[in-house]
Image 1 (tube, rainbow over the protein chains, first blue to last red):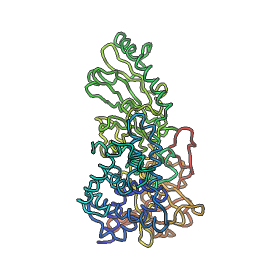
Image 2: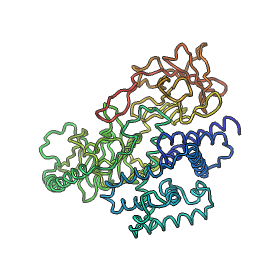
Image 3: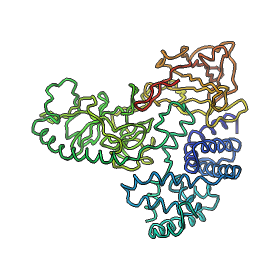
Length: 176
Length: 371
C-alpha cells in the first residue's frame, strides 16, 4: 500500500471508528485509561494496517485489539478489573431511573451478580451494539460459540430476575 | 422476554455511543472548548425536578383548556394582545396541523400543531446559547424531538429537556390565532423555559443520531455555517502524523471541526508545543484559525490568507496530515503558522493567524472566555 493510501485509510479508520473504540473502553475502565487504550489500539492498527479487515469487519478487529490492550495493561499493573466499579457507578445512577422504569434497579443488581464472562457477553451485544458474529471476533471465539454463550447469559440473567433470592444467595454484586 | 431483556439492559449502559463520540471529539479537538457539562451525562432527573414538573404540568392541564376556549372564541390564543407589530404568519391552522411540525426560518421558530391538539411554538435557538453564541436546533423525526447538531442537547416535542448540556428546556414563543384561522407567532422567547427533568423520555440517545436526523422542508440546515468554500475542508478531525510517520492519537496537534458554535471559524488548529507531546504544565498551547470570513479578525494576531508565498524563513515541522503539511516560522510562531497543500505540483499556502481570548460555548454562569 502506498504511503498516501496508508495515511488516508488510517485517518478514515480513526475518524469513523475511534468513538466506538473509545466507547468500548469507557464502558470497561476509567476515562484516563480509556484514552490510553484508544491510543494503543490505533497505534497497533497503524503498525498492522494491512491486517485490518475492510468494511464492517474493521470494528470487531479493533475492539478485539482494544480488549487485548486492556488485558495486557491490567496484567502489567496487576490491577483488578474496574468493571465492578463501573457497574457500581451504573447502579448508583439507577434509582432515579427506577422511579420511571419498574424493575430497572433489580435488573442492575441481577446483571452485576452475573459472572464477568456473562456480563461481557451481554455488554458486547447490548451496550456496544455488536451483532453476535461481530462480538465473537472481539470475544475471541467462533460465532456459534458466542451465540451459545449469549443464550446462556441471557437465560441466567432472566433466571435471576425471576428469582431475586438467587441474587442474595449468590453474594454481592459483581461476584461470579 | 429475552429481547426485551437486552433492550432494558441498554438503559444501564454507562457510556452511550453519543457520549463516547463527544468524548472522542473532545480528545481530538479543543479540550478546553468542550462545556464541562458535556463531559459527563447529566440527564437523570432529580426528584425535585420531577415534582416541580408534575406540578407545572398539572397547572398547564387545568389552564390549557380554558385558554383554548378563549382562543377559539376570541381568535387569539394570547388574549389582550392588541398590536400586530412583530407577529409573523405561520399558516392556516389546518395546514399546520396536517404538517405536524413546521419551521419558520425567518422567525427561527418551530410551530407544532396536531389534529385535535393544542398548537404551540418553540424558539429554534437552543437554550444552551449563552452570550449570544447561538446554535439552532433541528427537529429529529426518528424520536420526535429536537437536538443540537453539535453540542448534543436534546429536547422532547414539547421542548422539555431530555439530555445534553442545556440548562433548561426550549424557550417558548407566543402564538395567536386570527379570526380567519391563521396562526401567528411572536418570534421572541417569552417566559421561563421548562426546567430540566421534565421530559418523560428515558433515553433518546441511540435513536437520534446525526445520520438519522431528518430536516423538515424549509428548515435551516446547520450546513449554512460558513465552511470553506473551496471544498478542501478541515471539517472533520484530522489525524496528524509526526516526523517519525507515526499518527498522533489522540491528537496532540489537531484540527477541529466547525459547527462547535455558530459563528465560529470553520477550522481550528491547536498546537501543543513541543509539537507531538502530550499537554502538561511544561507545554505551551496556541490556537490558530482558518478564518476566511474574518469571523474572528478582531481576535487574531495576523490576517488569514489563503493565497501567499511561504516566507523564506519558514520551516517544515515534519508534521503532516493526509492533505496538509505544517510549516512554521520560528520568528512569527506567536502570530501565525502555515498549512501547505500540494495540488497538481503547486503548493497552496494558507496562513492561519493565532487567536487569543478564545470564546467558548459554556453553560450560563460560567466564564465566557478561555485562553
